[in-house]
Image (tube, rainbow, N blue to C red; front, side):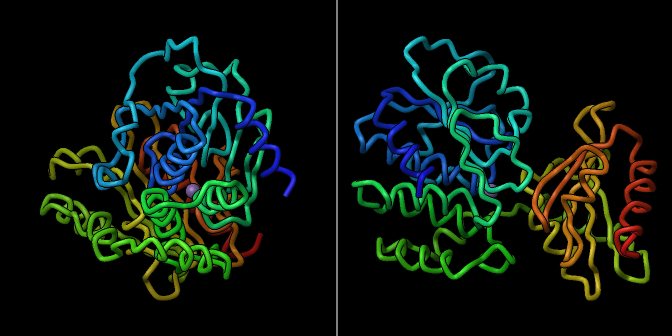
Length: 326
Ligand SMILES: [Mn+2]
């Protein structure tokens, strides 16, 4: 494929790379950037991975995790040649980090959000891919470098988390072929699963129960929504880093077509984050776009700068229009 060839040529041409992905990185963001970094190192390149201090601890076991620098100010490294930005449909997904990295350097953008805005010198944006991990997998497969166990674990975590354990519609025959290929490296699947999904504290569980208890159902059972508020975070003395499992609960209710999770920001005035999950044929990213957000066909989000109750009224009303097909 032309873009893969271009990226391999780009790698050959440069020596020192900076890698990052969207803020509050998930399994796909971390897994794909670590796999890419380990691959680049095998090619004899120098690599730095940077993030803000916002990495969920369940990913601490990923091979190469120690390479990730958690920074709170500009990268001052005049030796860098090029940048890779993964799993981000635009530079604003990096949030503050976008101001810390030398974006004057040539940037390669590898992403699977259909809303990608092509901010790089090379843009490999393919909304049909299950995960960026699957894209990095294809890149490595097209090179001379064999996939070792450390790379395989990272790619497997990308694939597993972004396909919801091979359940989402983005899961394709090629995702399973990739998993099959990675499993040749004798990954301990039980251990990977436990590290990522079986790590709740009692506080986490109490918050989740509170959130579940607040689920409201409207539009004849087709819309379900709930909330995570600052006072809940105070009460339970914890905050979820990753809300995927909250969505799994909401969307498991029979008949629900649109699931909404409203999350208050840490500080007042920073808006309410609206997470949207939909069942076909409702397009989550179209709903998010109404309020300047974006995402995938079945998973998207936006931020509304209104008090929580008002934000809920606005979005639920909009969601009802989607249910009615207007
Ligand atoms: Mn992803």
